[in-house]
Image (cartoon, rainbow, N blue to C red; front, side, top):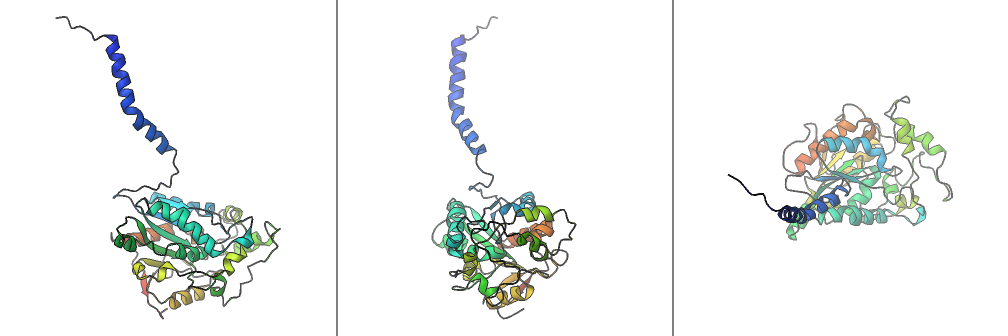
Amino acid sequence: MHISSPHPLRYLLLFYSITLFLLPTIFASTLSSKKPSTSNTTTLNDQPTIVLLTDAFHLPTAYSSLLQHLSHLGFPTATWRLPSVDSPTPRKQSVALDAIFIRHAILLPRINSGAEVVVLMHSYGGAPGSMAARGLSVEERRREGRRGGVLGMIFVCGVLVREGVTVRDVLGGGRFEEWIVRYKPAHRQPPNLPALAPEFFYNDLPPSSPLLAPALSHLRNQSLASLESPTSAPAWADPAFDNRRSYLRTEIDRVIPLRVQQAMLRDSGVRWRVAGLGVLGGQVGHAPFLSRAGELAGWVAGEVGLFGGGGGGWKVSMICTPGGN
């Protein structure tokens, strides 16, 4: 039996029909591949995005190891350089301007798309981060009929500052420690900042550590005005973050000594989940993101699990009540 072959024109029409049908999908896929890895979109099965807010003096690249560990645990991550770090106009910076940047450039674009985020703050980052997250909790937005929001707040030796208080105020009664070096705006990089950094920032690393030289290369000048300007009301004080605020103390910290961390927690007036001393496998200094990156990522993941109600958490965590230790 002879079967007639379709006319070549029919193949040509079929080809163009399939091409026109698939073109929008191919085009959208191409655009998607060009987006940054820190996507604003989530699905119901996604982990919350961890927004990392860095310490003063530090570029985000200093936290690369921690971010990689969090990524391997399945968390999308996002971080940016704060405006007060390495600013060409340091006298015009403030903690409030850092907070505005965090809120409008980092948090709102994500949560307005329906994403849930956990704000992970190291040291100075706790001050502007707490200001930026105010009113953006998942609970508050749900009451307003909105999706997304800040699921929880995690502080790593973070600065806890009450409204109207400066970061400088909480670091030893308004007196800077000896590692703070004042310099003229014309000076870009004080020669003694890298010399002091191993002793104060990275005192839990041996001098021969291969991590030290790269860490020093990620240090930049910090706007003094950001440390001396008053803060607004912090989000961690809101009831919306009850059971959703965690704190990791750093035992041999020479930048924010343990006694100062204890005092900030005690004077906060709210309950905290506080990691037990030694939770990362030994005494740590100011930069566990460098010396204990894997262990720190594991602890963060456990706390995020508790925020989401999905279990997890570390057994050594304890509750710190107002007025307690």
